[in-house]
Image (cartoon, rainbow, N blue to C red; front, side, top):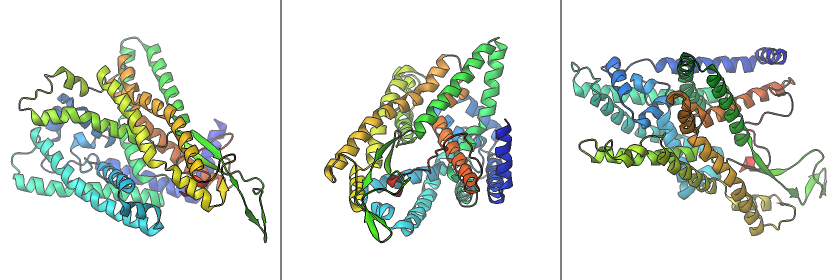
Length: 454
């Protein structure tokens, strides 16, 4: 406890770090306030009552990511999600379209600026489409004031929703530039955390009311263990050692590496991050969504198969979901990790992997190592994705069970690690002790070795 208080004092004593943290907290407060400003012409009480009776899990997931703004019909109802969607589309285009490949890999800072501009324009287009869909949803719920003309309601609120998303995107960029951590990720994290206190309080009251205090303690212990396991996998890296055939030392050259320097290629156990879960979730929502649009009488609820695929806590849903996550992990890792790029980079740097010939043998070796470490990573990711179903099966309420795994847990762990790593970097630069007692905290932005430049 004494070391923790000392660390907080060290953080507060660094003016730049203190200002960054205060600025970040202020921006996050503005974002949360925007989640309670209701769109004009919407009846929030009617919408909440209708939402409480609606069991659409896709809408529940969106509402969780926006911190309740979706069900509040707030100006930030769409949150930062259109920007995330646009970023994913641009990233996928970077794998398939040569123009975007060139921007991402060869044009440096100017290419990144162009990609940023394209992403923002695409965000506006996606927001206009999603805004129209959201207003249609609000209208079907009967939550629109009938005294307001439909034309004015639609035109004004689409503009407000678009402005809200663009403003949220701007807030995230300001955090990244002047605050601490990745701004967009922090906005999503704050939205997720906003639902945690209420879910935790409801679970506590439920278990205490049934005289099961020990069960609640076991739930907390299990949640702690799951978070620790997730941290280990998120930080897990397979290091492939490399050697340089020639290094310049003064005016001469040497075949030995510089003293104290250890070079390696860092291959993450979970290189794909949370993307496989997002893709799998999107695919699992398709059957019920298509059936709802195709049927005239809502027969999606009458079909046992579709009803099972629309409930994320049933056995059929989770079996299919698990295999989809494993498959998408391999696919996305194959797109993200290009062994040939590593081999070419080593060749240009006059470096090699000990015992492996340069060129194609090096690429094959890296590909084999990536495939081996992706297997446990994909299985773990699949298990994490279906853990909420197991939590519900053991009596945890559905809202609190979402924190036992899935997208929410992975985002929380990754963002918190990344933010703490940046704080630790500020401490170590001023010769203070880091946040951990031994070693260094490894976040997403601290990737050593030649892979950091690729």
